[in-house]
Length: 326
Image 1: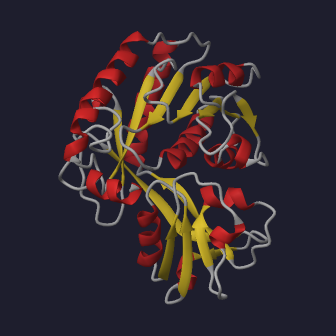
Image 2: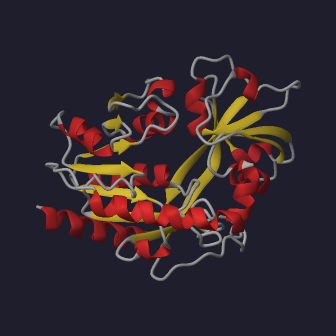
């Protein structure tokens, strides 16, 4: 059912019998946005989110943005939902935290960003805990565009260059969490993918550098292209597994893909196969396999890449928003 819905959401037609529920969703989300009072925080917040279901590259972008802010003398901290973990209460996240407790993306952010990270369903409460350390002067929210209790001085929305806005309908008739009018006043960035043709006025571009793989056993790094021509297995518990498999195929690998639900908790059987072929996964999935005996498993190192001109525009907007909060 999930796969069927995704195909319909990202086609040109809505799921007709779900249209009445889409109107109910629109009404309830509008009321929620109107009635929720933003919390008061002592540091400005930049929200990086999306208005569609599925991955759009938010986490690599937040890692990039945290690095750019540190270059400018800022002290960023990160809050995230903690999908896949027990995030009923805000929790500080370390590089070696258990993904079953704090979520896979939270651990990845802690490992890659070098910034303090707090995971929690209530992003405003998570931000409050983050600020208690006294080491943060700007908060980045990985997701949370629709979490209206979280105040924000600037919003950055990422869209997928191949999927775009799908059929243009709200959930559950389409993939939209909010209507496209929500993009007004935000900075829109499109994640570029092979064959992606979706555009948006004044949107900037972000690519993902995926030419290196890392061994889960020992950390050896190799060019992805060194596996070209080989038959491999690939496992992905992300929002768009097909895109990950296509990345491997574009590099010349012959891929047997196994798609799992986004943020699914992995078991060794999920990534085991009855042969000796290499197995590839995303780094987000790899953090869930710490301590396992995985001699032929590799994750793809995905790093945000943004052209200098676009990066300059992004940071100009960010600094302008932060200065207005000073």
